Image 1 (spheres, rainbow, N blue to C red):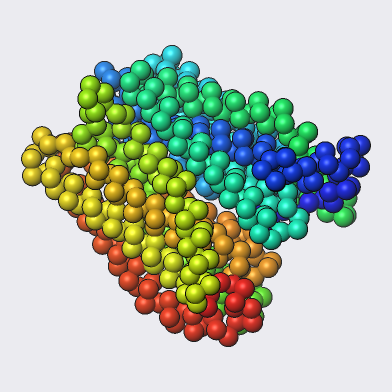
Image 2: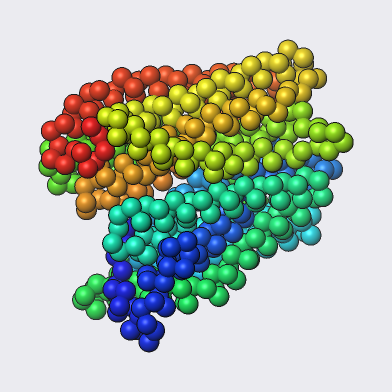
Length: 537
């Protein structure tokens, strides 16, 4: 989401009757960066603590038997629900950014989003008191809906304010984002350790409650710190110079937001009343077709009626290619909270002395590897460029797909060990650790490069929309990962090797195809006017 500040740093300071050093721009007491970054770092850390702390518990809880305190849902349904939930979080960021830009302003959107997320966790916590019946499920799924809506308001807009802290841009802005993303992974790492331990060893709803407490800390911290450290940054919406146009835009936002919330509420009430019984697998498959169709329609419109010149069309063609292969990558990577999580719970030896490690703890391995490896990869790309080996975006994408393929290739052997024993053998945890290592290497080759490529390759007037397309690829990946993730089941052992083999083959074939396309893409982009700044050369 693109956002332009309404005021300069000095104007913002004047508005608050504070000297410039009191605003988010000039006060650099946070590791040499604006103090506002500390506020955003802490808020995002606690939000990710709650999000990643909750997510891996979902499939385990929903699939657990009623006697174990769960909902007793079939695994394919529970996994599909997690996929729909993950996809919806990414999709909600699109209207969330729009509402903030046109109506609320970034700061208010973040605050309201944090309130909704906290309320969602509270609702999920209340589901434990209500029991596994209709009332319990109502509180549980209402909580998931509130978290989706709140994350849609918070996630894109907090990132936008991070960018606005650095109006000068440049390397200092990149360093600020690196610190910010470190907060994301610290929150994810700690969240999964704490909620996993409480959820699996004490009770599911203690884990859910811990995630909610984390988000409450984030809400309180943001409410206390935002005004003092962010000043006027993102305080109001981006206003149209014509007051009449601005009023019309605000009415439109309120109308469409009201319609959207109303539709969600109606569907929720009808499902609760038993008018229809949602089939998560069918809904997930339909959503996948709709999202892919939406992407195809959007790209067709851009090429036919977007007013692009020849060079811009070539760059958008590269974005189309990257979108396709990113969706393939995320459909494998986002099996972490579903198939790999279930494999950890059922088929992995988690005993260390007299202590059984919670299955959810394996989810924190990715965050730990990101924290350790991200600085190494940052240095690696710069070092290669200095030596004349500046890899193109498609080449890095192909490497990302290949490394993720290696991760799932390992799981084929682990799954076959389980199947050959009839499910009696539990495999070493190092199979999952190794798999997550290669997947993380793949993520670091693909994810940061994808974000950078969207901004560098997009025509200037479509940058915000292209970032939405990038999130759409993640949404599609979450859906597919959820739809196939239920194929890890003690009662259907033969499905596991097939799932991991199919995933490995898809990733490796995609890596080879994209590797072969890298050369013609480089040649195609060679005629673009600012190809070097686009990072494809």
